[in-house]
Length: 367
Image 1 (cartoon, one colour):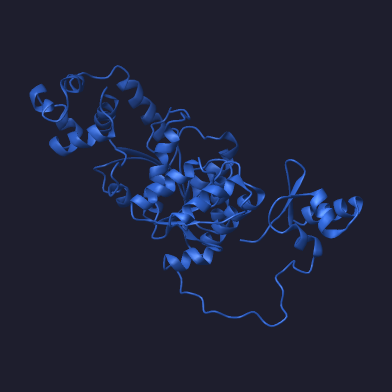
Image 2 (spheres, helix red, strand yellow):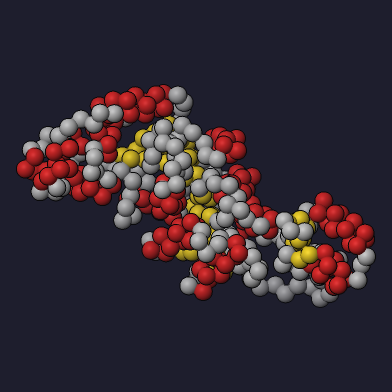
């Protein structure tokens, strides 16, 4: 993008009173930004109010500093892009949204934004050990099937989903709520570099934008918009993941949810979605079949006498899949405290059991 073109688009968005909706109305009425700024006040007033019309004729005080900031970011590395609504490379799925971004900043491979198989994976920032494992395992299986996982780079489910997809050998897209000159949270710095190298990081916010709380619900609409479906792994009833699921449903996209323990707050959002019509899934294969990315499986009954892995272990049977304390486990198994704690430690080291806050333990299943 030429500096003059970038300046016109940034000036439009920096004008007081011009948000995404107003900017699109002006673009529809007059064409590209340079033409908007050539209009008379009376012409502008046919689309916006008098105050905004007058503001459009003034150059924002911080315009040139913003231009320099974006230009410097573009020069700092390869595969950095600024896409406008008028750019032929702008993701077609976002153009179909009711509220698409006017500018899109991308670091990584632009072709990934048009990947033929894209699924959003979202969930709690504080998942249970099983929830985090589910996110990683589902994403890895989907990646191995050639699906591009879209998520938000947040702690918890998002990070596990991105990492799993990369391990599965597929690109992944991170939609963030900051400028692309910073990584939030910082502990995902290494993960962000891997995503940019094998997929793309996307934001509608210019370089220099800090992690403002209001930006993250806004970025959720882009996660939903860039995906053919949305999987909610774990979510409380107040989770932003439910916003993503609602936006996906409003855009006619499939919504999937993984059920969990009735005792876990992180499962209640998923259960609410299932009651509202989201599709319950127990494996990545369920999603692949529903989106018609693979042929449905033929039913094959298990051989007689075969047990699920781990069923022969009486302690794992006693644990079930809900969090449970030592006292309850002793009552179920009859084991003394020393023997029980030693066995739990061994299972924890094997990755079959997770130790939770409050002295609780939880069996980890395979997604």
